Image 1 (cartoon, rainbow, N blue to C red):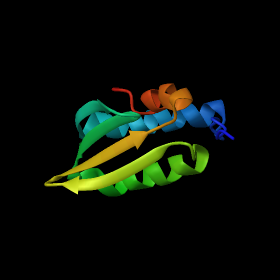
Image 2: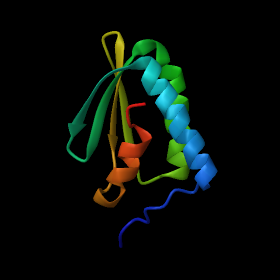
Image 3: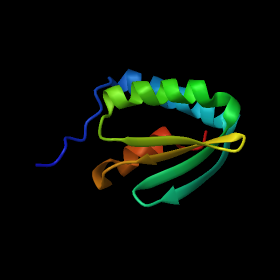
Image 4: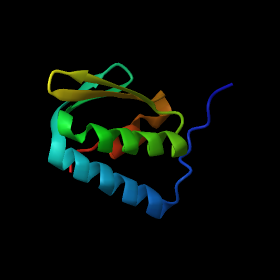
Length: 97
């Protein structure tokens, strides 16, 4: 049985979340690269608490996303993955502003 790919946010909620992510990305993203199943995003370490909160809320509405966050020197690295049918949603969420 496959997992349902559907965000529980309203259209307005999705837009607000994308704007929130874009603001964080605009302020703190150092690098972005594709990985198997998704994206690796490297952020300045000073945004870790804000990033963790964004990911916590994102897990609530899109439980099909996978997030792994780890420190790498002064940076924090996010590996974000999704099933093939949800990669477009992942790309939209973490698109460059």
